[in-house]
Image 1: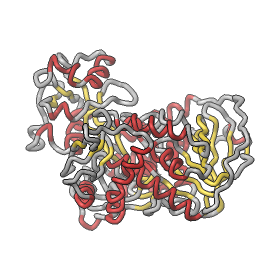
Image 2: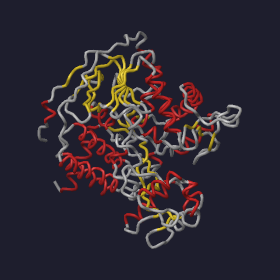
Image 3: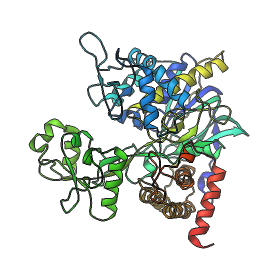
Image 4: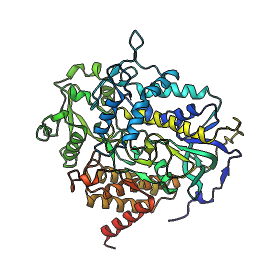
Length: 536
């Protein structure tokens, strides 16, 4: 690998050693910072807090058994059923038991959850929940409203320092102990070391490693790769959830065509106008999400295309009933009242991540993880609807409590001013741009809703070739995370939850357990795959 100009750009060491540095300005990171108050905390965020976070895009809400008819045991059992046999039962029990307390925390921070005239939370039901237990804000505005409230609370908390426009690149450490974060000013070469007694990774998911995703551009797997490079154990990386009906109109990220459209009678057809779900499942368009996603994927890859036909079921009332989807269609030049909507599966959520325990501790001392970058075992092989925001707040709170117990005496809330002058601009070369395109196309094609051994080995070989031209740490982090997912998928020789192997289409009871890997093992698997594909 050639030398990069970054190799000659010295890292500036912060003058302060923070008690806690949190990498990520989404729900998990901000909630953890608030729970740590008044302990001084530094939050490092790539984008302005909230803007690059998948949390703000969540249309559902937070699942919590808070009604008099519901119990945490029912919520626990629904979560275990969705997880397809590999959830950590104790983790799920703790998460569902603590859900009500975390919802009350969010109310105290000013989140305007929907309530009736008597002040009771209004609850809705989502797929695979046995009760109405999803707490919402104005229907589909929960994520945005939660983030707005937390951002306002963070801005008013003097013990929280927010540094926006810094991209985490590496963890600083000695052996198994993590002692800080190395970050780079976005768009520049200047790197800054942030030493800390505790580091919390809350950097989000991996959506933009895929060509079609519903996630914001900052969800690019950096945190996963940073932890793996430092030696952390990675769990369940093969389990990726795909939403079946994203608008296939070349927009990045891809807007969603909500599943409620199919609930209202919209049909799935191919370019010949043929319904294809009737032959695949007795529930046709209302079959489980993974089955619909695979069926659409097969139509698209066969060249027949897939379209959501709303003309008869919804027709002229589309704009009034589904204004968000209507606006996205209009922007793409489609009138959904008179034209079928092109759709394709899109990467939606990563169940895998950095292995953590019940307190968010990773396998490295001094490093905790929360939110989508973490793998607590709460989701198993497939996430239950509206459990992702819940997991983020439950384990962010547990991390805060754990750190407070380990460091009972906080430092004073004083920081030296950082130099805000712009440094030298970074140069994103054409080879790296091409490498990112190859990575995203490869994962969507070969490590998507359907995988097999040959396509996964090809993916690892293609990523290796692309990675050879990458110089910047941030781009190499994306390549590493892509390799981790592909290698984990190659290891699991069965189909379960979000992981479907066309060469092993059935679940194997012997493999009904979580998977664990390290970057060293991923490197070995990738090397073997490259040798197989090249005949070396």
